[in-house]
Length: 356
Image (cartoon, rainbow, N blue to C red; front, side, top):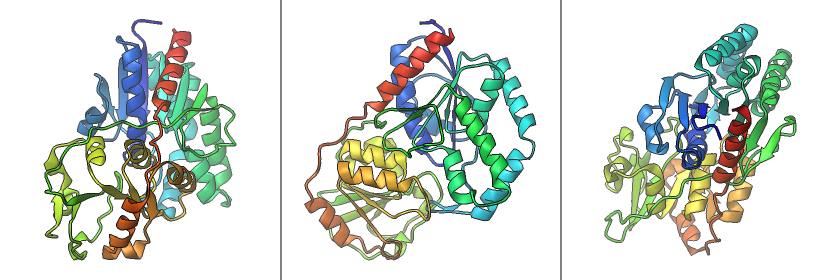
């Protein structure tokens, strides 16, 4: 193996799930390659990146994808998303050429994206090996939301071409089928494992309310009080409910916090679902409107964790007591092994060796 493998990684900032998938792979890879050189590009906060990625890296702030314009954590803005895709592809050849020039100047040995496709197209033009890693891809979601639109065909073709230009798409478990991609390589679940801490609540049960990395403010202030239940919510909410606590006050990273609570209330998303299952934390989830990935995530979660669906109206009113009791009375299945990080890291190491 080349002792100074230079890996360029582009991490989408559409929520925190793309980072939750990528970070364990990079941490595992760094254990295999002590001299690994990492260059990252992401629009996520640097502190959040360094909290998850435990090895040194150079950060280039920026976004090469937007995923979808969101109204909140469960609903997309179709009109704004359509306009953003049309704008992004209006000068597509020029964007690809600029990305190829950027990557050629950076001179990485290998490009990894989760899950932007512009760097894959640029890497192909610059003759740099590349791969992608995720449970979804934007081409499949684009076809779901806009495939029936007259203007969508050329854009979809450009997206597919970029993804297929990569040497491989490492599709994590659970994930969408991705039948239109010819380069899919399945890997197992990817999740960080946390440590359970005593939160010091005197026997009360702690419920983490975490709707992902997209703004989604629930009206916890108006929720009824449930005896023996404490709600852990974001400090940004400035919650005045007498049983609410800002989860930042515990000073724990997200995975350790998730491992230490008695349940999490969330939406279907890879990062939280996979980490909750692998750490044995029960899950209550509100479905996302028309999000095609969620059915694959929910089916997997039902097999590997204590979980239940909560209706939007019940979540808004804080009617969670019966659902939580039902979760805790259910026997817990054995947690799945998050072996996908090592599988993905081994593939990237082998690809880097070939590139060198």
